[in-house]
Length: 143
Image (cartoon, rainbow, N blue to C red; front, side, top):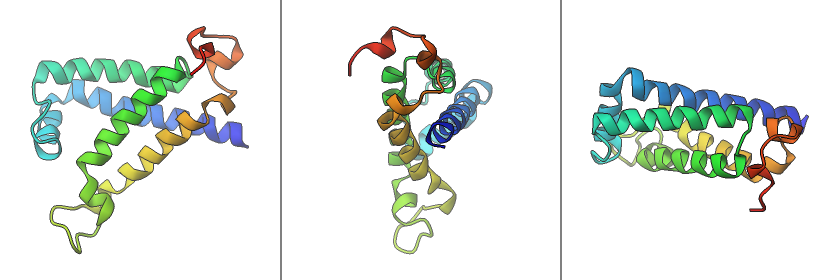
């Protein structure tokens, strides 16, 4: 049951992140508005956003198939932590009872960060990934 849960978590997290990466490519202006609203305007350059979208989409493919997990999972966690930081008010006070500018729909960013940490922390138990079937040398490098 644990291996199937990790497999489903890896595929769903990779899929979600892939949607975000594709959004940066297909709807760059949306990404610009997100950067302006939640990240203090950092990363509003459209060329930079497009490059990040390509890099993120590649990372997401690695996550879905389980390749280079020792590198992909920390990068995934960093992206998810950055997102959670951008909406921290909505994590602390989802209904806006004490803080201004919150939205309960952003609370799942905390759950997504937790999922990334679970994947990273349990990557050696995830036996249903390509490297577990004899694949990548980089996954055999000790952490």
